[in-house]
Image (tube, rainbow, N blue to C red; front, side, top):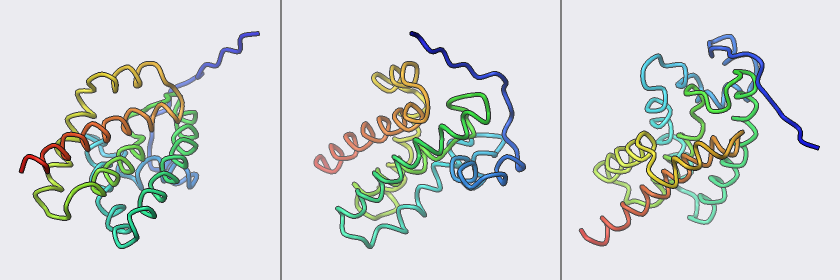
Length: 167
């Protein structure tokens, strides 16, 4: 038996939705996802305070925290996607926040590396080279929302690690 799911209507995110449920507040990036221009970039910037809040922890605890936030994001983003009628609406930016924090864990704590991490992540997130584009198109729901940004983070981390070795 095949069960088809569909989303019946599309709703634009607004402050009322943001404040209507804690999961919407989180998935919409504490409001940064409501920015009219470049909400993904605004959300990515929130990855910095998330990283700063965990950076004093031992590295294994940082990764554990990020893994838990990734898993929480699957649930959170799916919840808001259903409310919006669009699985990966541009206003859902929790995925960018967690991904940016993960990248920052891997680079030296300097402004130059932070800027490089930000720029590379945004490039991979926007351009979506393989396998990011494949995941974006073929993996749905909250896991799909989190996965494509997770892959963009992995690609940025690889480039940044190569840069660190080269420099």
